[in-house]
Length: 144
Image (cartoon, rainbow, N blue to C red; front, side, top):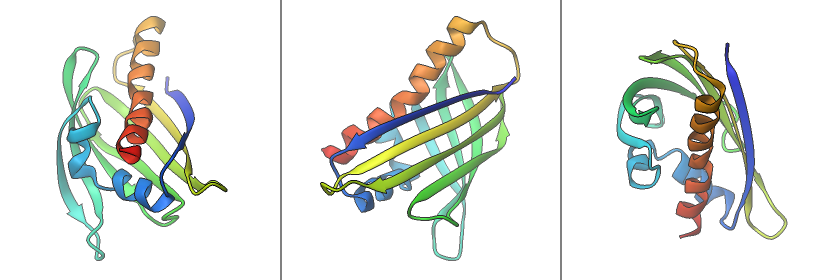
């Protein structure tokens, strides 16, 4: 069964800055703690990464997955879907970026994930916290 999670965070940085960090996938290993390696496999006609392979820490082991990105709602929304993965059946998600009156950015991070093997509830909750940490790490990077 797929699990969903959502988190909203306010970032003291412009939407343009936050967007530029969020779509610079090759630099994720510099700031997203669980992302160990990133390879952009395919770019669109504008040079934007549309198929990206990740190696990440997950549940005490290394996992590989490939996401495809949809820029059709850019720069307000960045959507992704998993096309390949070793321990996941599904990873679907989106960043929603909205400007705040003070020049900052509210970011909502939505994620749906389904693992190949069911996990106990406490393990799922621990994994969810680590995944949602990515949003806090994005905040730290953007505000630096």
